[in-house]
Image (cartoon, rainbow, N blue to C red; front, side):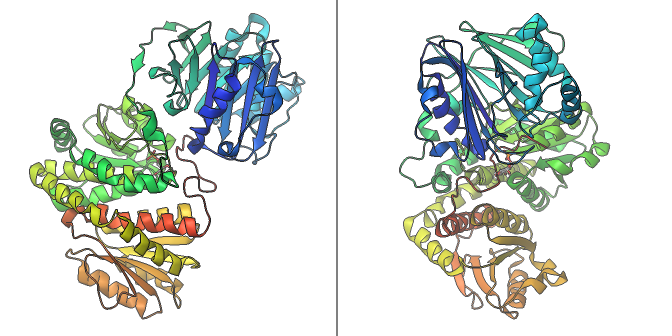
Length: 592
Ligand code: G6P
């Protein structure tokens, strides 16, 4: 969470470059923002505000003065409320040292106490501010040494970036939170939490890995090991991202664009490299115990995976949410396998699970969208989603690609890859029945009928039970209506008490062996006054509203989810919420 971006180069418009780039990182946090620039006379000027950086049209006068060095931050609040004081950058009292930070300095209270005793004064409630003061304490031997010493004092996972008045230098360090250096042909240097910030200027990048720091000055990036202080050689990598993929185009929101892109993204996932899928399947077959790990939506995808492996390959796999992984470490050995599922590849809890697994010698297979991510680089084998950039906070196209890849893997483990692929291809061929304006209109009319609801319940069985859970996440994230997903059979053990006259209940009823059972559960709801919305290939008499989905066999989790993604989107728009940037959330959760 939190986006960091800095520029050092020949342009006089450093602050404007940073403003523009930060807007592309806004998905990482949008509570407040701030930019600091070093003007030609050496003065550091700072502007920071509460609110979304995407809404900023022009910077204040001081920041539009010529500057070749600027850094900025878009915040997702952790320590300290959403106020201008707590917005980054943070500085020393004299504003000579300026810092932006992503992550958490876990021991900041202790360090802050010591600094206060030494006479330092603080303006914010953040953990970040201490870092500027820690550097100041150590400045005797210069900025570089001071920065390094400050890093050694802080605990936790972080990405931190600092500048010191008059030095025309940026220093950054990473322990857990991503930072990537970009180098343009004109000698300009960039450092950012994610590549899109500088993609329009360069595709040549260098990664900062954990426990490394980088010094950007005089058109050069020098890398060091944070522990040993030894200098490191880094390879310049040219990435093949397309700038236009990260734009909204003619769509009103990224969320809708990404839902509609599922025609292409799913086709790419289904056509994943066969060799790679077979290799991954071999790892699963050989493993003494496989655990699927993910967070949020990816965690629900992991649950779908558990059912897929059981139903298709008759194989038991374990599932853990990243944040709940720790207890599973007792069962890992060097013959176990972890399958990490993630869009960003930067989710702190999933990364932590991987780190724990690696200490046991467990092999890591990741299914991840951002191929350049930390997760991908920590893995023994990576199956890329190839879904293209996903910008809306609520995951859609990455989700269905993840399910498609798990489906391929389950079939490959059952030695039936061809059959599984064919089934997915047939399902994909039916996507046009859903991803079209008429269907969208129908779902909009459903959204209109339920937009005033206080609660929405979703039920499913078997593979579609986790889809009910994921549907609830989608609805919560963007509509802000209380939504909950349940296994159909569990309703009568408690949740049914919540149903009252008119409560919308979504019934996921594919043509599978559980159809009669889920329809019986729907009847139980109807008898208590629920408004039944059936998501099913066939209409049923009990449905008050029917959303038709193609019949798709074991691809039903993918097909059933799509109309609910559209419903969540439509509800958000009708309720005047911003579906791309829901309140209180961030796309990439890089704190535990
Ligand atoms: C956040 C996002 C979700 C996502 C989850 C896991 O909560 O809002 O859309 O599912 O993080 O992210 P990952 O990048 O690991 O898939």
